[in-house]
Length: 405
Image (cartoon, rainbow, N blue to C red; front, side, top):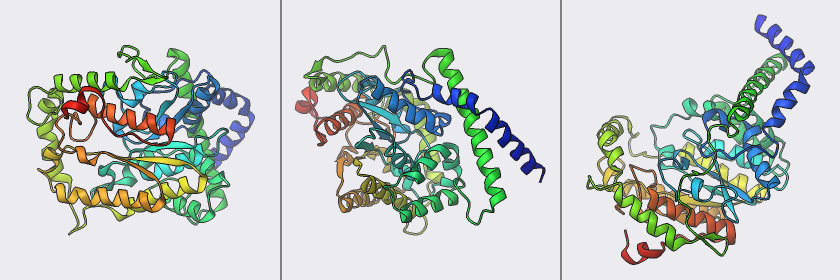
């Protein structure tokens, strides 16, 4: 009872102080909001910031599209050719907005896509990076999802009139199963308390983010690395021959001390520990290697796209075959995952950029699953050409085309 009284008092305080709250909120949505290169968990859980980045780019006349994924969206270790660097908003005639981080799996994407589809001049094309790790049976979404859940995005999703009531119910039910969203059988008083708690949490988070933006003018990191080399333009876009040639050179230079083609720094410090951890924690349930629940969530993402008229590009990422072959997720097992993603995309009528054939390319990945400079070049070209033309070009360019990888 005491908690409820405090919550109701806080509601009154927030109502009185609504002008101050709006002032802070506007700091996250005005045209000065920068695009962060790789959002923090606090940032992806702030719908004001995520929406504000998109709207700010539009105000500046920089066409962008959200790229949804998880840890592969981090441009820092992946060099100049990573989409977050190479296709940073304002660099070329179309740009990519990194939307997601570790922990942002299919349910988070379904909610965010539905929320983005409700904003003015909503993006008609988006890019999806599903990850094989999300689908492994050792997954624990109830541990990860609450940390990145955005009540603001959920409300925008639920208010989107293009999304069917049935799909909204399924998404809300799954969010509740994962420890977020609106609990079932909630009474009116409990709902008031929860709404006030969520409002207070969102306000505190947005105030902190606005404060950070005011201090350094860029939040947790501006999209793109100002020190990274910029290849010359080619009719408005990157010169792909130059991009691939430099990316191939950089990837090779960082992987001279091991037989797997991994970054020497990562291989020396982390590979042994990663392999031991994978073999310890990647437990399967009989013959079930992949979660049917996560595939249901993935299909919900595709259904959200279909109902809102959003055209997604589904990027099928490879993993480092030589590393995964030393675990229970052997080549034969991994093909099950690739087929399931392809089939789901085909059933929904959506395009796939399939890089699964690069599993045994020496320099495509810098570690067990994250792109090197070379893999980043492939991803960037597919994203740029899809956003520009509606067709994803997954071919290499320049010296890479001649020499292979």
